[in-house]
Image (cartoon, rainbow, N blue to C red):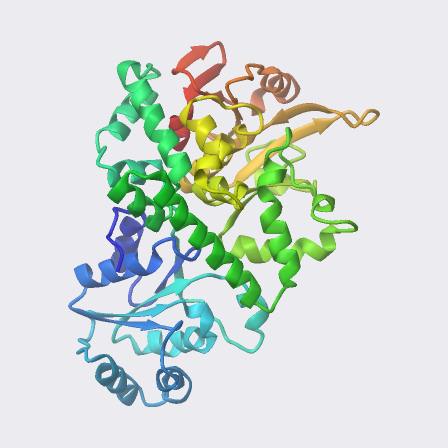
Length: 448
């Protein structure tokens, strides 16, 4: 079992135990290798008298059969589990963990009966990818409480790398709108590290143990290979479409406007063919989709009618490794550009992906706004991210070291007036305020 890093999801799990168990099962939802099982096992050890971990990626047929054929006799069901796992279950003091439950959906259906029985608490881990199509004849319980387990965010990375005082200092300066001063450069260094290493626990552990970006990259390449294997193994969508879309993400993000254009995947590619693969990757929580809104307002999701979108990876470190998949990390230009603080337009995709990841970790769905000239089809206004705050829309722009323009922010305020709240620009420099725009260093994105 991998070492445990402090994760924010743990607090949400405690809230579930306090407020929702045993009437609801807890579903830890997240991508593979994001740390769900480790988190579940730690929670089970610390919060329960005993627990049983049923791993559906390696469980025996006899245990699977229990969830199908033994639900009418729950005394026998629980006794068999106790003997099989050599663990005593205590009423109202034990947790049964159903790991990777998407691999055996009858167990998820069985939860309705088990929850009605009420003797024990239940925790599921897994992904919702493919479940919709595979669950036609399965009764999915409504008594589930979902907690998303995402890659480690910047704050979790700081704790993992023994820098516990940085985030409190950042919050203090952010709330006071004061520059970081002497802390700025070392915080930027830590943020660059996080962008390169990413937030997948295995990669973070490799870097913590060795301080070697090569070891972290090796861990990430193995995770990417695992994801590609999952794409091959799923049989709900055309594998070549899923992989083709996934492998194209760095190229699409390296463009100036960063929109994902389906026709770039292959000759004759159409959106109707890729809707299913995109949904699969989204539900697997491998990607982070940003939708274009055509009318910025406090209810952003109701304004999504434009089909254009951006596709970020849920973990920025994986994006860095995927972009240079065929070479060694020493030949990875993104490592050089980020470590030497020489970001240009193409490398700027990493900072924008990191911003999208930070906003998602803070509970924000990704939305952007763009406007084009009907005659020339040229983009006349584009804002990277839109946030809802206090009944207003707050625009966020991410600037690489070569870009300083804020024309789109000015145009947005001129067009939509009082709908627009505080505007933010994320850049490599210090915190400062200029009229109605607040400039923040990249690393303060998690505080928005």
